[in-house]
Length: 467
Ligand code: FAD
Image 1 (cartoon, rainbow, N blue to C red):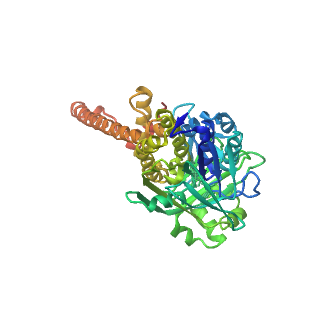
Image 2 (image 1 turned 180 degrees about the horizontal axis):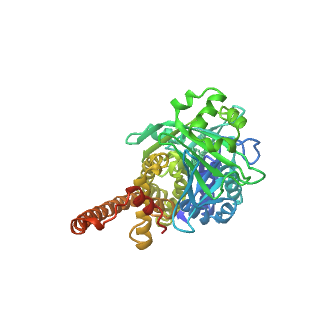
Image 3 (image 1 turned 45 degrees about the horizontal axis):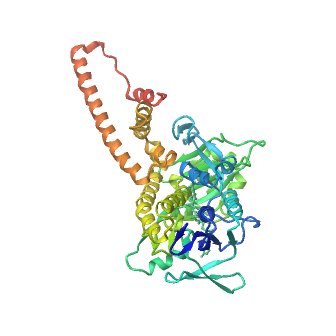
């Protein structure tokens, strides 16, 4: 395709960051025929002995899968993922209760972050017009000329010019620094008071220590632990907790006492000795939520993935949203005939409201995961939503389903959820009023014949209804 005098095959697209979104984006641009140069500050992770990342595994869902499918990678990645059909809630007394994610057949996948990154880099490299430049740390770049300067491990610098710079260099993006120097660039960053720490739950007699097709959750109101299965039959447990609480635990015995109080069923599965040592292996990591706008500078640069919108991990959507960025950009490239001066502002216009919404929803879901799932009202409302979704599948769709199993735009899903909540709550109010009035009438008419039903029984009955 032609635009601005140069054809795609003459234009250089520099993808800064060879993480999950950068590697996938390289495939998208290479597929269109651009000269793609990927610059990654780290060494090639396919050759590294230890891969340092932000979580060992992640939940891949519909948006991410769609993005992978467009570059022919869906099957390869899905075949190495473990389906998780439900959350498995672990109560303090050891009781486990599943809460399905969606309808029968709907599930999210636990995938290995390092393997996903490696596969995407290998796929990008298959294109003859894509080149990987590892050990290239972006230092600075010019919005006027597109000239970038990279630092090499030996201290030398390398300069390179590109027609388009795609910033995929994560939450602490160097590409974004140029945006911050410009007027009318909105930026906000919020650290939540909670950190996270990962622990490994080993297999028992060669098998998973817990049921593998679930995302296990120990919700404890102000904090929680989750566990996702891995292909080697381990679980990666992630403890999310306020930093103040992490700081109170200073010895191995403190760890055991803490687990004894809040996660007793996990102690034998992780192992006392492993808990005592692994807990202190790395300090708890911080979590940040970043919003900014616009996502582009002229026709020169665009931000995607965490560099544009780092979100807290509680909706399992950070990577999925970043992957969806690639599809949205690709769709706009078609609409605007690959003319960067039209594509980039349109991308900002379309994508900012959606990415800002998922950042907010991820914050909201943290409270849902660690606290709401313990509430009977939440479980009752979820049942009502599920029943209505079953009866009116096109009209009432649970928010989690819209976010996780569809490509409905995030901001439209949120608007729709607000509307649905209004309708359902009003409906419930009408039903409750009707029941009270009807009940009062019956009691007045036939006082001795009405048996009294304990309210807990009504709850238990409602919660045990199968859709
Ligand atoms: P990154 O993965 O951060 O990659 C950025 C890359 O840029 C890195 O390779 C880095 O080395 C490179 N880089 C940085 N600076 C430079 C520079 N100056 N020059 C060159 N290269 C540079 N998302 C989900 O969808 N599902 C989940 O279940 C999920 N779970 C998560 C759990 C945790 C604990 C956390 C913290 C996040 C989770 N996420 C999840 C979010 C997900 O990890 C991110 O959204 C995703 O990694 C973003 O990919 P990215 O490529 O934009 O950024």
